[in-house]
View 1 (cartoon, protein in one colour):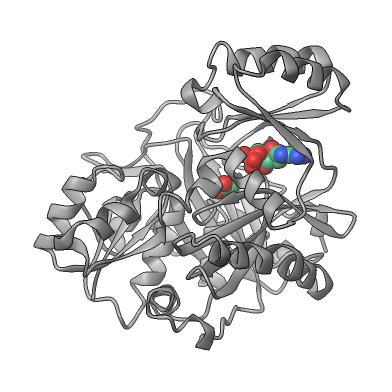
View 2 (cartoon, helix red, strand yellow; view 1 turned 90 degrees about the vertical axis):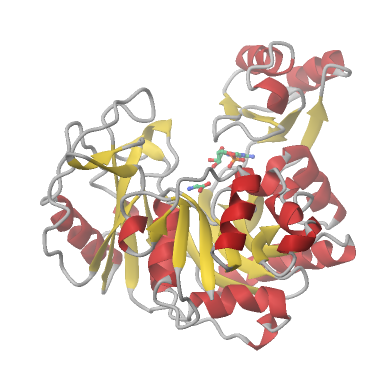
Length: 427
Ligand code: AMP
Ligand code: GLY
């Protein structure tokens, strides 16, 4: 079958790399893709939210399966668009309905869902302009730190952890009254702070059955030793040593099963990935957030470890055959180290020529592209996160050493990466 992937990051390169190996995949297209996806499929210049252009392309190129990478088209209803159009109904879309995507698209929606399904999460309250004064009183009495979250999508910037009541009040006002994140912060969720280690678990679901496809620990801070501002993710490791059977059993029983049962009970149409962002609080999982997509850079370790034909797994969510699938993952350790543009996560320049991509790397290494594009002068930087260098090894330390070795051959002006990914698991 012909397959179209929507997206242009490291996540989409990892998905395209894997889908290209599927016996079910004939032609593979990526919209809009990056310089890396162009090596495993054909990039097409269509935006992830231009559903009309996607429709025309799918009909002209006999696309049978659309796999959605980022959240934005899902929250904006790409699944529903294809489902409602008679000309497109034969095309399967991998991703939840717009309603299901609210698990990521609205913090208030996901908190209420968790409350209804008794899923462990931080205590919270939600406020708008209407009950702003009540919110101020709530904040004044809240224990510190206080977590404030813009309800809607805010490009990963909508969560602020406030260390003082004054800061919380000012952020609260900034979000609700001054609409710091536009309509996304018209409603604000105020949440108790959870102390623990953050980890991610990934599953696919058809809204009734589910399969866990992997887990990872993401390194979100820009600086060595987990310091400095948050980023989209500077690297990942998988499997995570402390995510043992005892912890994963708790995740499955207390979080994943009630979530999928909740989708079924509430008739939420959902055939896609679910990303469980969890806090491990003294050995117990709490949900920090749901995402209706894979993580980035988590995909760059979870997907390479997956030994199944990924198209078999994703299609099974549409054919009712998910229960009969057995997920197999490589037992080796896998890491990814993200090389970013100088200045990221603040301002950075684009268009820097990347050298060394044609080097012969270890057969344990895969160089995934994130913010790259092909220009007249070669492959150039085109985003904050530029490359995700994934490697396998007998343990995390060896895998990370192999990625760092590969990065010695790669360069672009201002390139930076964290040299301590997996530091707490050093051997
Ligand atoms: P989110 O967009 O919900 O993932 O939040 C962004 C980041 O804020 C998360 O990745 C966590 O590091 C942190 N965070 C969110 N909620 C909490 C919480 N209740 N307690 C502690 N940290 C949190
Ligand atoms: N790496 C975190 C995310 O994809 O949301």
